[in-house]
Image (cartoon, rainbow, N blue to C red; front, top):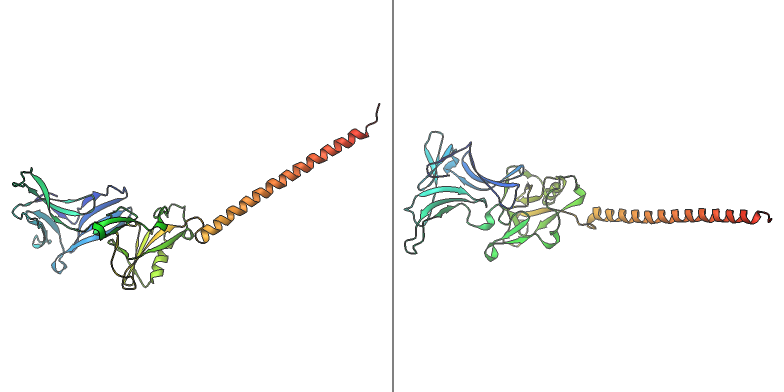
Length: 305
């Protein structure tokens, strides 16, 4: 979006996540809110928003030299997202939604002291922390703000187990389980939330829904997600005052009722096959012995010439 360009409620900025073909990001205007959204398959999640004073409805936005100006339906300015670059004398040149889902404004910069060439420098960034981005580590990983924002794989007991694809017919609810991640929540927000469920009820409802890959239970509100994304470590010692984040995993063979019954069936089938082979061997052996015995008797009963 370049200087002077207009964005209204019927248009949006879009970028695509380089590490996930199913994910894209959009910057949209809706009512009194400007928002950033993660679009994953058929689902949409909010992860950043800017509200106007008194929640006044925004009809359109125009990129100006000092930032993004917001206007109502009567073309009256009702707000602005200011650029805050170090060189405030330089006007904003363009606004971009990058491949991480972050929103930036850029100005043209020349360092006369270092003699570097002209280049664009960011004067505004909507999200400062890596762990506040929607997919900072890609799907199925957890971002930790310690150690300069690093990415951690899901706990070892969950590695090598599916976290998506539960609707392809390969899994039933008895072949999956929910695992709670300690001191983890997500930056993603769903449009539809459920109340009146316990923490265990929220996780259990996700188990029953094949489209659900993760669940967040926070202050009596249950949210379901089709992607394990935006997961981040949070401080605190746990307990009811903190949110509870769960991920769905496929059961390992031998885990739970499904794994045990599957293993038992395999053993019974193998035992049955062994019994069948032994029975057939005994029958064939008995028939062969019978024919040889009859033939021998016939040979001994014939008169000598």
